[in-house]
Image 1 (cartoon, each protein chain N blue to C red):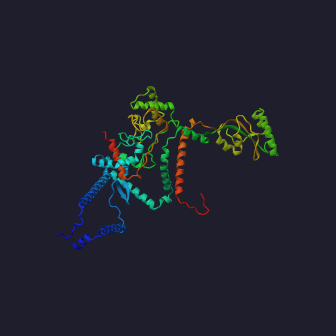
Image 2: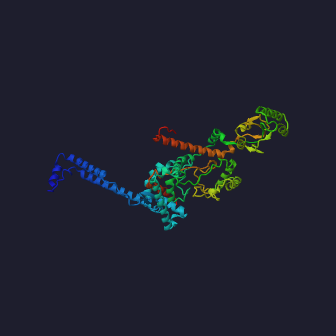
Image 3: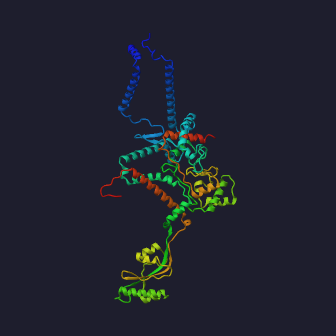
Length: 306
Length: 247
């Protein structure tokens, strides 16, 4: 052994031995690392955690916060039984969550999927909601979306109808009824009393219009699209031309008409503010989805489109 | 005659001392690393209250946390921890806290999950409404409330306006719902104490007006996915130590 060492120390090529020895040691260590089996599951709860459930940690901080939330006491004032109960609940919840992943609930359960989407959007929206809009931005948004802030109009009108073939002449035609109605309109516009004209020409209330003022949307429901289209343009005191609808001829008498109008910015500030923030968060969500799409591989089956 | 002749190896005069130096250095590095690792484990394993009372852990946390703070926190809270009124970022070096009571546990929770960060466990309880922008309070009402706040915080104020502001505070403004009828705040909601003259946005009359007019919606990101638990514990400890340095 000594002879070998001395021979080694005195050989002129000993400078090559050392790198060779180091290389061999390095390869040996690499081989050990490559071919050694993976370390087994941890049997020690790492610092900062209160428990490992199938190697998934429950944070000590979360545990303590949950104890305080459930007991409404400071952690130091809680009893061991209270802490044990909370820990058991947290472990149970973790087991259920892991089981949900195994059962692929994110794929199959609508409620789980919906909540996951909500969670992602909440993180996307957070910085957007932190932004304080200026008055100028709110006014610009209001100007761009004025239609949202229109106040509904209202009308007080009477819908009179002349039913063809009824009252005066069973053989009356549409054209004849139209003629009668046109004469009635002429007389009303000339100032004749409504009751007289109704009695003389056989006009009767159709039953569609309310007895007093009603909002535009209600009037539209009652009158129908054709009559409402005429009524929506009439001003106070106007009498419409005869309107033929099926076997009836209608005459609208508008007593009072409050046209829809856009509310002033100052009157709808709160709604504008809310709508602005909703629009911003909607934009952020859409941008996030665009980003996710740009990074995703989405294949559609033949014949499908989106 | 020795069995193994080492003369070729020790022929030069610097070989042995150099080798000894290198070995000593390596040993020193190993010891320091081992000690640091043990301290980090202790820092994280200990309950927050225990950490706060251990000078060795406080020191270890400070050493680890200083560069972390500079990299992740200083952009908002300032390199000196004094906050940034322009951003509404609070002063971290005083003993006034929006959430919790300034305990290491509370500081750590805030770093972990943030404020209005979108995380479910974040401080998401409330935000201050934009009283002016939403048309809840008029310009005059807000100005009167500002005077009342100046009075509450012990500064000079206009007496009549402050009286009117107090009526708004307790009435249509419903300020007491969050800030308390006495203005002393509520750390469960993150509603500041209005009596201490400590303000995230500067606290001048114009700044107070803007806060009431446009509301407060500041966020702090959650760091649980960006920093390790050890780093977060170190940061929390560092901030705890800084905020208790005067007391």
